[in-house]
Length: 245
Image 1 (cartoon, rainbow, N blue to C red):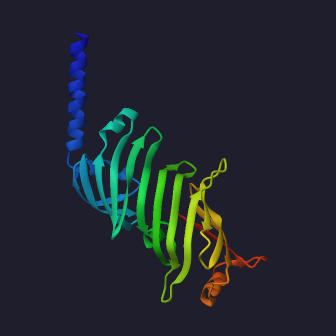
Image 2: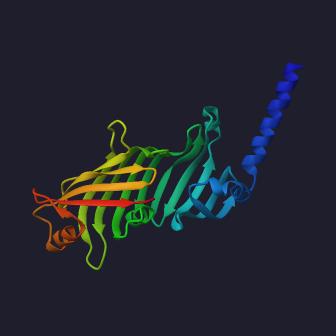
Image 3: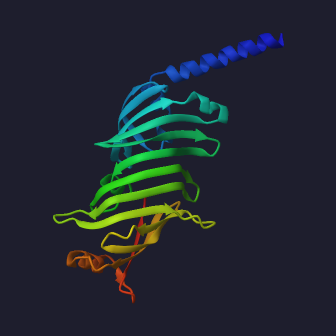
């Protein structure tokens, strides 16, 4: 009797999972759209394998999305999809899922155009270059994002009629206890020596950056620093910025 009940339960569970993962993705999206952190449009396929023509954050288009379900992650009590984001010639691959602690991204690797990151962070200044992503884990906790991994802004520049080159900028997690943020530094070959951090909380983020011109810095860059920051005794400029995501 117990064996028969177990077989019936297993059959019903398998049938239910099969129905969910093969259901049309637009139908599933309509039932969970208000709980997603992003907006998806132009959805095709199923939960097992599908795509969205556009991923939007706060009304800002970010990228095209493809996904494929990873059923083995159910053994860890996670509902997880392997994802690929396309933004022009840039590609970002990884996984997105929901577990006991909420929604998360993990094993993200690839590149994104810097202007896209600027739109995401609501930075008014036009950005140029590309961002190399190597994130082991990213989740939105109660006190702000939880981040493991690194970001590298290559060929960084502030855009305009005459772009201002900044070299290569690294963003790495601030591992001090009780802090949620990214430390900022340059690789040493650019016109600015950069030291600072971006900290996050439930309201948004705060940038605190000390930018010191090197001998290679041109007059246009120094003028921009004077407008953006407060001059320090060591010749650097302190730049502070608060934003919302």
